[in-house]
Length: 113
Image (tube, rainbow, N blue to C red):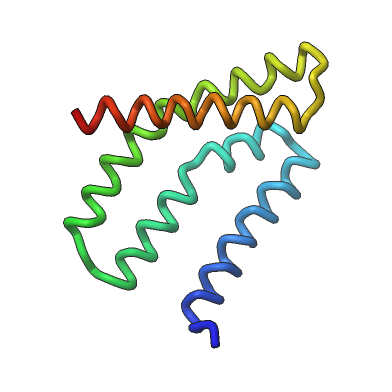
C-alpha cells in the first residue's frame, strides 16, 4: 500500500505542473516565470524537512542544487537553437537533454575535486 504522504506529494506536484501548463495557454511569460521558479527544489526541500527535520541534509542538498542549476541553464538556449534548425521538438529536446547530462557530468567532476 502506498503511504498517504507519497500520495499527497504526487497530487501537489501534479497540480503545480497542471497550473503551469494551463497558464501557458493564456500567457507564455507568466508560465515561464512560474516554471522558472525552483518549485521542484523548494517542494523537495519541504518534503525532506517534513520527513527528516535534518537541517544538515537540507543544507548540503541546497548547495548541490545551486551548482547543478548552472549546467542546466544552457538547455534553454540549446533547445530553441535546434528547433530553429527544423529538427523537430522531440529530437531537439533529446539532444538538449543529452548535452545537459554531459554538462551535469562535467559539473559533478569539477565540484568533487
